[in-house]
Length: 175
Image (cartoon, rainbow, N blue to C red; front, side, top):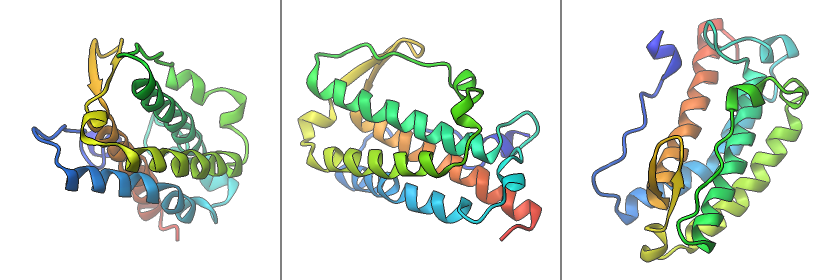
């Protein structure tokens, strides 16, 4: 069950994050909307409403969750760049996944991801070394999170949820 829940493993922050690592994070974030679209655009409603693991979300909910999560990430990064160590507002993602917009066609979520990621990548590519060290406080984690760590965590998040979908498709024999 752990492999179904964390198909790419848990996020592990590197001890040192170098420029090459940051470029990789940005690349993953940049390419994610198109990769996600390629995996889900031809799935039927029945397939989109299939859970990726017992007790997990449907593919439709995963796509909508990614839009919700990455909107929040983008805002968190902008807050950290414009305020002095802001405390971000966490959100109950499981409850958000149950709201009405998590059960509609996925096109709006995909368009949201394209727009948010395009703007997010512009900002990430503009950061200098000092800006990458800016932080926000995550009250649920009880600590400061630097933007370089946050970018890594969200690159992992992209791969994590993409793997939920690709592995389900493989198990089910879907193209």
